[in-house]
Image (cartoon, rainbow, N blue to C red):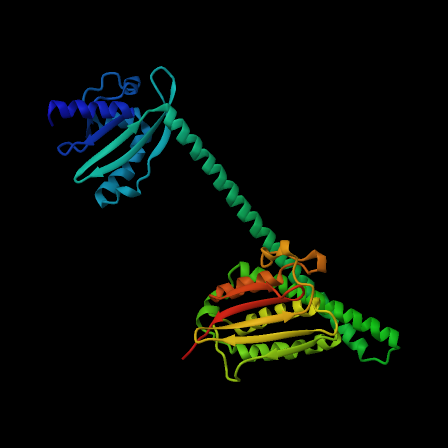
Length: 372
């Protein structure tokens, strides 16, 4: 290199406050100092010259000795980009603590070590790294705590199901007895409350399973349920509830053949039951809830229309989030629609809500068709 080139390199190195070391191709245990050594090096090695042996570097900076082990492996494997810069603190000959950073680089066949001693830059980096570590630890703790809470919550809710089944059994046996009309009405009220609680427990457990990602492989690869059959069965299942609430539950559909979609039958029926049950809950007596289907070559769209009060405008944007519910209309825990969204989106579908004029609501979802 020319004298002019040496001057430019020296000035460049000095401006960075870095010690740039080129590993010797002749003596692998020594490094040549490129350019002018930074002033801070004299605080550790007063008479350093233009060459530093690996032994001297390791004795002066024990941290570098360990770093060199990884650097040499990276140089030999050609994967030097995996060697991250490292910051540590060192005490000089006068007992003053100083931050330093080391990094390994390779240019062609030449191997370099960079040691930086700019305190302002390193203190800023160290502060940012520390904040990142604190944030990462806090995030990990939050995730662990959330997982523990979810598992505990799941266990508690699951344990509720057993005594509730026993209560349901006792009430069903009582309903078979010859009871006075007033007593029979009380038994029926109890059964309705049990059904309501069982529905809430299913919602909670379904959401827990969705959040944990259970069943995703089967949902996407091995099942193609008949959507038409699922809708017919779900409407038939909910007809007694519709009759009890004096609501006409109707199905409007195109064609009569199977409509295979991406999904899994039991979860698909839970999605349908959630949407229809919501419509029945809010629809006034004497009105109708209409379930419709429209199909194309690529997808099937299912709609559930009711004549109820609709959804509060301020809630519409978060309707399918966890625990979102319309308190104005006495909504449930706000898990059913969240489960529907998680399930439909897992099957590469979409789900949404639209107001129907001044009164009424339409909930819809689309799923890809499976052909062949």
